[in-house]
Image (tube, rainbow, N blue to C red; front, side, top):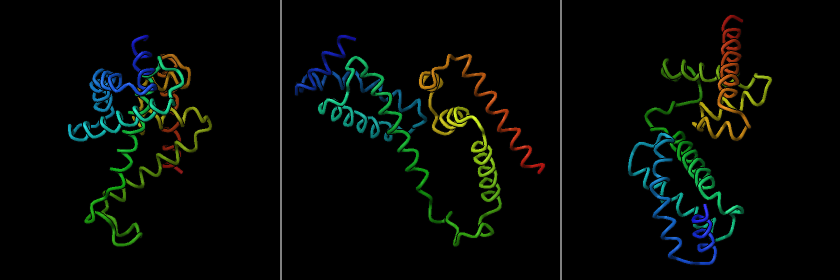
Length: 183
């Protein structure tokens, strides 16, 4: 811990050697975190890792890290945000040939229309959950791909509690979906 603090303080003070040392130690871990977030192409991993390092250095130079011993947690948050942004950008990139000519659902291929209908039903069911924590945990775990440990830390749950909460939330969503199908 003290080693990180010394490096961070060096960066805050403008020490380029401290920057190089931090990058050398942090870059392999950043790449692993990115791969764990589902980025498989090594070129994308390298690009995102460079973005994370650049953001980290800017934040450290500007003194935005209040607790210098928590640099690893800060980096994990940066990686989570960068990977989330990358995922959202990829979702917006739709090949031209798959774009429907108009907004009419009847113009969509049947498989895509069925998929979009199911997606809409699931999102309505999640939105209908009465416990905000259930919604937040389901979205964080299944849609944003956050790690169980991160979610447990954020919601102050132990792993066994997390398992019970997510099981109950999935059961409620399943019940809402079945009621939607039957009704």
